[in-house]
Image (tube, rainbow, N blue to C red):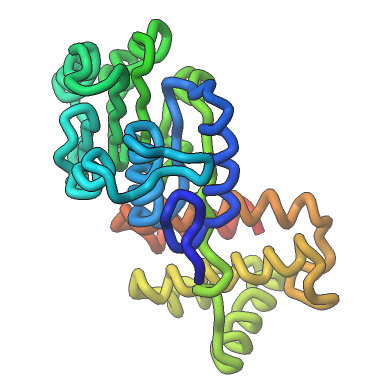
Length: 274
């Protein structure tokens, strides 16, 4: 798999859209990267920082060799603020105020500052409102990139003041053996007939098994949406409905990866969406 224009393996299409957007020179102060893969979103955010700060940037993006690029890669550039948040606790208002205060301080090098916040959906109501004030009256050349596996947890007002880029799982990771395919097909067909989710839940007792089943549904929905195969589990649905369900189940995967109650979440999703 080749690296994209922002130097990251996979998610080539979204990297190209971001590159065209950055190349326009009119960068919005609030960007949101949504998707289940934390690592790729983080790497693309680092690539954007390199693009903005590279000392020898050409038309083909950053050089990856200058002092700025190397320090950003090592996460030690003074004007690139990185907040990794792997804890279950919410991002409290005091933390957000400290972040926004640091972003208001004049840049030490050049004329811009960028802040990347991992799992930004962990903002509580108070911290989200405090952050919203920064987006409503942003200082020039200040950029925030919010990474999330749970886009639905953001305040609507925060979403409306940001530009969202969706990172979808790569097709290469969504491959299944003939045995897996047959087993999952039988489970889905049974649910479609009986509306009883228990056989699926019983086969998804472990989180990895649950995520594997979710990825199978993604594969079938993608095939039906694109018409790659004439017969799929969802070939009776319209392409629009399949694409819409695909986006919803990608978001479900992100929520499942950071939530212990994955069985209940999967059952609720099946009853509501399938």
